[in-house]
Amino acid sequence: MELQPVSIGSVLGMMFSLVVSFGLPIGLFVYLWRKKKASFFSFATGLLIFLFFALFLESMVHSVVLGSTGTLITGNIFLYALYGALMAALFEETGRFLGMKYIMRNQLTKENAWMYGVGHGGIEAMFLLGITSINNLVNATMINNGSMNGILEGLDQASREAAVQGLSVLWQTPASLFFAAGFERIIAICLQISLSILIYQAVKEKSGRWYGAAFGVHFVVDFAAVLLANVSVAVAEVVMAVMTAAVAWYAAKMYRAMKE
Image 1: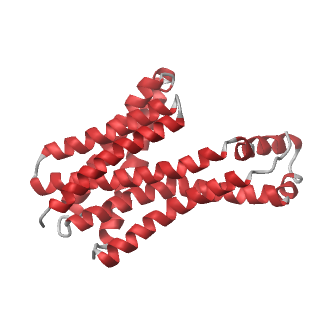
Image 2: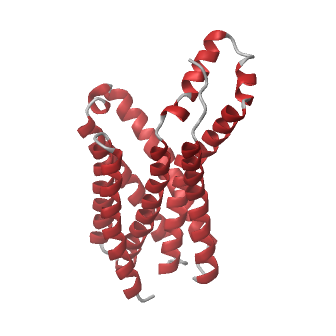
Image 3: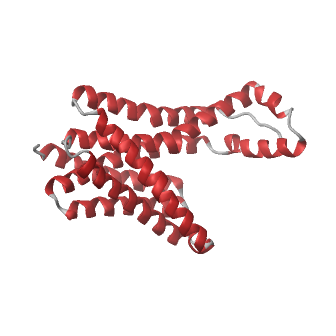
């Protein structure tokens, strides 16, 4: 297999995903910090809670459960979607609740709950898509300007073939999927902000029903996303967008009605 040029459409899709992953969270942070007087502490809390509960604790559970069950879960798309959605909802919403109740207790306002959601959804976008987009753009640029050939020439035949095989995803993946990845992160950030408003209500009212609502929404959206992506990425994106729009509308209505 030889290197093939990466289309301009794919490069634009990578750039779009990069801008969404970093630009949207940073833009929202600046807006909330300057216009709504939300605190950096709330942003940092959302960021750190996601890293600890989702990337550390949840990953540890995955390694134990998935490692001990073989292909029982990973080999069945329904079970995999069910398991993944349950774990994501459990760790992220529990972390969100504990973060607001104990870490942010002296700064828990509705503006800071919004800022928490930006921190949570923002670092998720940067880790899951932003870093990958940077890597993709660098490799695509090196392929298109010919400098990648110089790097590959220094490798033995087996290593070169493996490297080209790994890079082939850049020209074989439809450009629309690179754009879809960015669109999915916009949806995810909106969802994380909306869920943060629900959990804020749970903490302020000391009511488990709002935690249950956030858990349920998170579970349903993630479950549908994994299950439908196995059928059609476009269908999965549309369904996620519709469900998130409904949740965001309700959260916005709740936010406007809140009194500190």
